[in-house]
Amino acid sequence: MGRGCSTLRRRYPDLAVKLQMKFRENAPASLRQQLISELEGMRSVREVRPLFPDVTDAELGAMYVVELRDSRGRRLLKDLNSRDAVEFAEPEAKRRLAASG
Image 1 (cartoon, one colour):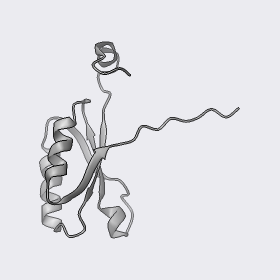
Image 2: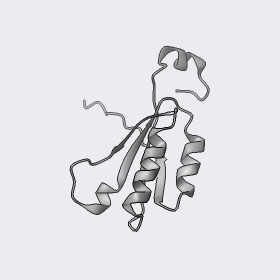
Image 3: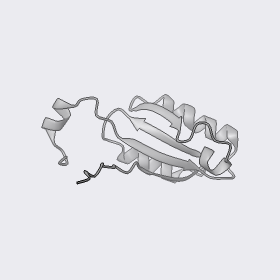
Image 4: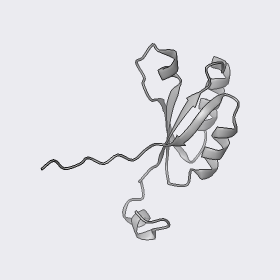
């Protein structure tokens, strides 16, 4: 996938980028919910969901996936990383299956 590849965008208009974000341990639940609601109201955000929805561990429960409608998440990434409630936000790593042979 080349940067700025218009052919790719025409072929796969729904191709999305996912960001992972983790809330700080001391971030109040109200502040977390406020940010989640703000993200869900953004036109460029398709979905916000917990990375590990059924865990009881507080650290794993603080991790979220933010799925974007397009690949222009740089500004949002910078914004999330500037928030006091967010420990980190980063693009989700792309993984490829290796062929065994």
